[in-house]
Amino acid sequence: MAPPLKVNEEVRAAQADGRPVVALESSLIAHGPDYPLNVEIAQAIESAVRDAGAVPATIGIIDGEFVVGMDDKQIDLFGRSDDIAKVSSRDLGLALARGAHGATTVASTIVIARLAGIPVFSTAGIGGVHRDAQRTFDISADLLQFTRTRVVVVCAGAKSILDLPLTVEYLETAGVPLLGYRYDEFPAFYARSSGIPVTRVDDMETVARAARLHWDLNGDGTVLLTAPIPEEEALDPQEIDTAVTEALAEAERTGVTGNALSPFLMKAVVKATGGRSGRATKAVLVSNARLSGQLAVAMSVEEAGA
Image (tube, rainbow, N blue to C red; front, side, top):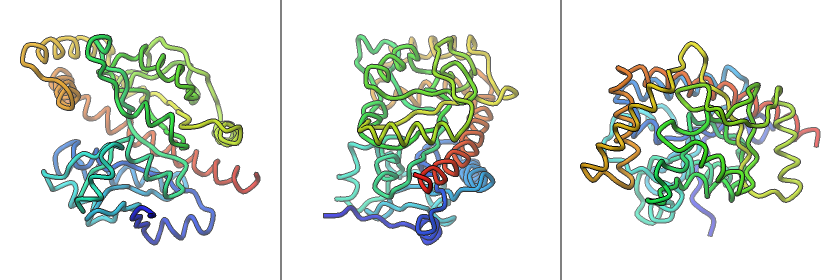
């Protein structure tokens, strides 16, 4: 049985003509900043993709259907609603069975993007290995999904609340290609530097060719392309680390665990930075969307010449 996939007309026409498309998530709309800022950011992301020469396809689940290319009304619905579930890859079957709405995470968005034949996905930062995971075993489903799904994910590294060295170790062990676009380090989301080296690539044509060859050689899963936050919006990594350390201690005292932990830590960072982390997140999202559009163009050319 084929999954209920509803691809909008613009995306379908672009694919029929061999034009580039970029997949975008909907969890940042339903579970990110408050309305109307969440919708304004989603619109800015889509505009950045278009400016780079590609077609944006924001992905969500509406009435039990995978919608690829949400329209303005659907994006506004997700932005205004406070009861739309966050759906990861493990939850997709249940969301469809219930005929429900759902906001897709990194893991679930790339599953649907792959089903729709979209090879590029843009996000701010991926999930990863949480701090103290040696005790809690708290590891994002994103990492496992990267071993299964053939897309290129463009991101600013992993969220700063995570254990970045262990996240990179996991990716290396899983055989996920990890590239840095015109940068030699794994970005730390709000901060440009983590001190963790990655393989640098200086042009999108090489990234596109490397991804195609990786998959041609039966390489399973995702290729990760990282790019740091624009320098003018970067935050002090020590400031972020201090906020996360204090928040983790508070979470331990108050019993915050599981799915509630990441939002708890992110709110602590927002408070500690006086809201500057929110502006930094928007800058990352828009910058990565622009790069994703450029990559999608390069991959379209690569596919045409293959």
